[in-house]
Length: 148
Image 1 (cartoon, rainbow, N blue to C red):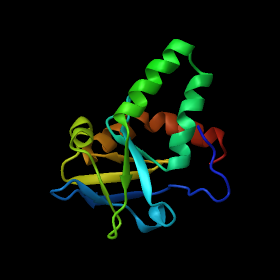
Image 2 (cartoon, rainbow, N blue to C red):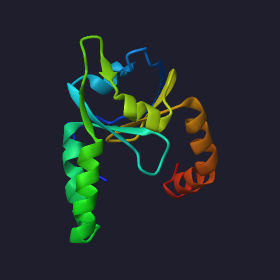
Image 3 (cartoon, rainbow, N blue to C red):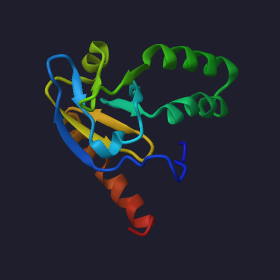
Image 4 (tube, helix red, strand yellow):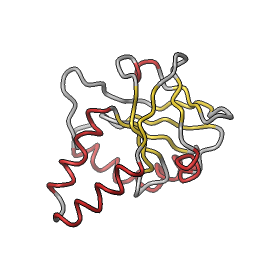
């Protein structure tokens, strides 16, 4: 995972916002203060969308290359870039999400925005609660090992 530089934003916290009828979602002000656009992709392993600033998005290909064969990397790159979309933030601080992304993650009305250091995720309330319940023990174990 890319580590944020001192000037890179850190996405933390949990917010709940409504998706409007045009699939626009308000992004918390502190998350969009210096970023005019984000890249959005359906997370391949979780029931959410992953939203990344351009710098993080640009580093994904290099990270994938380090962990895959040349053939695997080519397959990943083809799918990753085909499934991603650059989404600008409008003057009201909203991100316009693609219909296929919303359908893939089951996003309809209320959305839970969760910070994840150098990126953030968009969940349905039910999917977010299920994810938290499923991974509670892992979080607690790692938190304890980290001295929290």
